[in-house]
Length: 139
Image 1 (tube, rainbow, N blue to C red):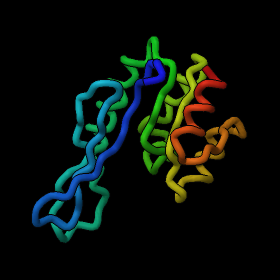
Image 2: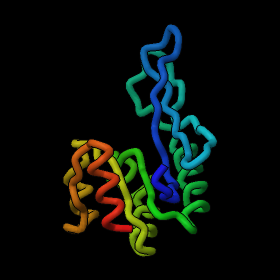
Image 3: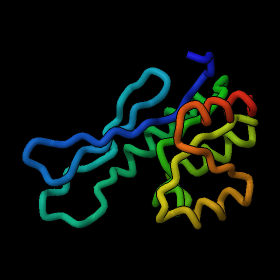
Image 4: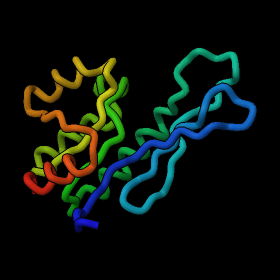
């Protein structure tokens, strides 16, 4: 509504009938598609449900959309990013191009994020008006 050209991802977790675990989907901004990034491992499974190949496919698609974007939104800096995969390189590419990045950070991976950000990150309140004000200042 404010005219920002946005790319990135928003994650949605959806309950599956009769299942203990929800499905994890990424909506690719600005206009889709939605990509399932979880695997069905069975109700007794304890392993990681992330489909790393699907996540990397989403990263590749967002990378194709980065040209011309004014802001990159990434649903989270999680385990994949902490280990050097996932959206980590794309976030670096965006910052090198002067594109501001909004990224949620899983508290478990805050130390890895802080090491990655090297003091350049700014913590924002989680309310939309503060984020939009920040974007207006960085645009």
